[in-house]
Image 1: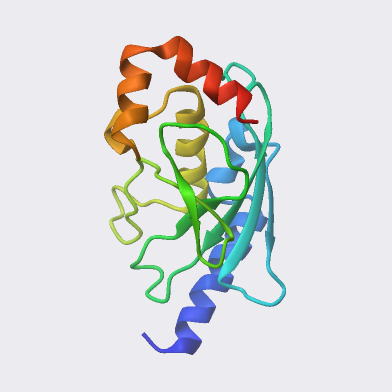
Image 2: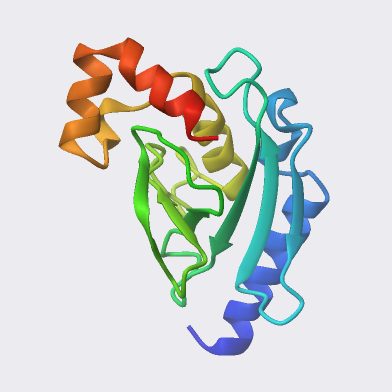
Length: 162
């Protein structure tokens, strides 16, 4: 795909999200804010509050979305600027120390009309995973075992990490 067409698709995706025509219209994401890095259209900043009924109790989470060069075929990288203890957060920084990788469970499928996914769908999946982490997407075997076998310790570490 040539660069001009790719940029047009990215701008369309940004505009869809900014106009709340995609998954952002869901009530769970009504407090989310989306902005595009002025210096790099491939980098979006998203802030949202965690669910009140989660152990994170409404904490504000800040994400960076990196749009890949092969977008829309390639799935966006979701990075979390806040470091906190969670079964689905890989606790090491990459991408020039921009954030911690969040391993969401929603499959990226842009071209399949029956399973079409957009960034709003992924963030709805992340929102849900803040209440119910995905064991299948665990980033650490140790944290996974702790989550499954010692939920009290897992919850305490999670709460204290904010």
